Image (cartoon, rainbow, N blue to C red; front, side, top):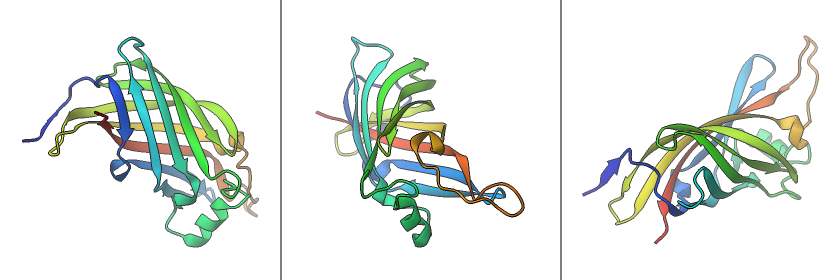
Length: 185
């Protein structure tokens, strides 16, 4: 029998379950709408140690070439030197992190995000979604997170001016992350 609870996150080494993890983004397009996309290949681990409360050793890698906005021409452009320059920077990374707030509820996670070789601090608003045992004898826990960044801070500066004012692509990028972690035995 599977048991899922809202119990506190368990200490130990956790691996990201890539098949149950989504890293999505949204950015303004033509100053009138939002375009959404996702990265399909995410891997990493989180180490929670009771000796270091408020800290987690997080190491996440995202394959930039796995970008998917449901428009292949746009995806090719996003992989180009105008944006991610995937030929030279095939991955982006999140490492961290210090957390403040309620680890059994809502908290802020601070870490470093590296895109195109540029590393900047970022803080995510995180919600602990629950933990429990899966049908295969493993232990899992889930989290959701939201955050924002300015793409120009990471060297993603391509744009074009519109005749009516404004630009083709907004600078602010909104992030939405849902992840399921598996406890390593």
